[in-house]
Length: 267
Image (tube, rainbow, N blue to C red; front, top):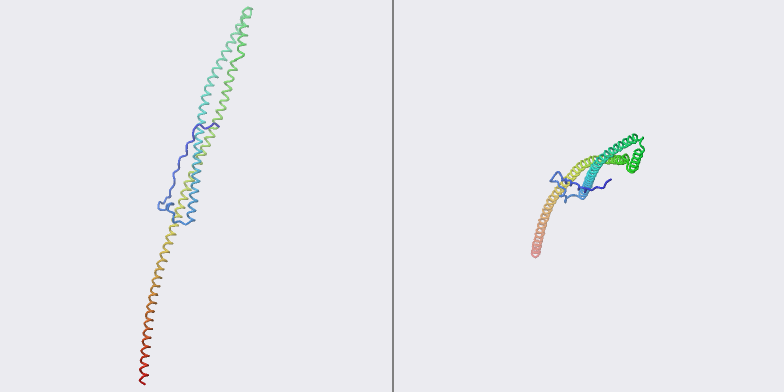
């Protein structure tokens, strides 16, 4: 696998989801119970984990796109190289045909000059020189190497195309998986915020019910206090009456004593 010369593009930020009910925001949870706050914290942690997974999938998708661009560039380069090799092979085949024509002409000249020893020896000498000079660079040999190079380049191009097809399949699979993950994130986010809003609403209803109960108890305590004050007032009134009666009884006893003393003196 070729190294990636293109920098990986950063993943696109995902929009933060907010509760659907603005009146039931998660921020206004100072009056929630510890269980509800813990549940909301767990839901927020789970949402953060899913968001990190989506960001990782986006990063992998960007890496796949960069690798595909690199492979496309390599395929274009191989196609240009194959085109240049094809032109070289065509030139080599033309040189081979010219060499074969020259050989046929030399054999015809040597055959026609068989009755003349001088010309025959000269033709043999020239043919030997050409044969010796052609041993180092035969047209068929020169054309064979470009053909082998062309075959290797074609095989390499097929490998690159296979890798490109595999990368394309991986990209499609990653796109499908990212789409599924995004759908799951949307659904999970809506579910989490719906549950959180329901919990906040239930907690607020419970708090309102408790406040009403407290107010009822306070009103009842106020009534009891008023009754207690009335009873205390009645007790004080009775105490005053009792004291008045005691004073009246004392005066009556004193008068009786005075009257009893006067009657005794007369007798």
